[in-house]
Length: 216
Image (cartoon, rainbow, N blue to C red):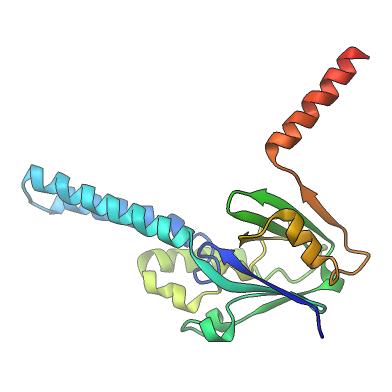
């Protein structure tokens, strides 16, 4: 039986394009300014409406940032990113998946997070990152700011690599060690898997080393 491992991806990156959550406060600010300038409402009602709008905006951001999506699968061929067929939304680009083949993976790092673990996949120079042209990304961001539903025609953020040809995949309900053990049978021997301990553990190690150096 083929080895495979699935996990839930945290946040909105499996559905919305990269940076979409940052647009929500911008929309709130635009609506707030419009209410103040063009609203012509009593001051007490305007303050109440702005407070309710701020609460709704904060709730929306909190909900989208804690979504759980079936958008991660690892098997002997590589790492698959993107929504599975049963959970795919409308839009051609949002129905796509991206395979990161093991031969194209340079190294893997697992970072501890309160919600579980963040998997960082590093690709070598020249690999296809799915980022597209910077000019097109800027235009697409402006269009999405003006027309929020334009996100339906853009690629989800999880399918695009960040800076340094690195994919950052936040995974729910799994510890870094559990994730390392689950991936080990599928990752080729030439691809190192590193586990970055908690910042407290790293701080304690640095403190011990400094004390030993001082004592020496």
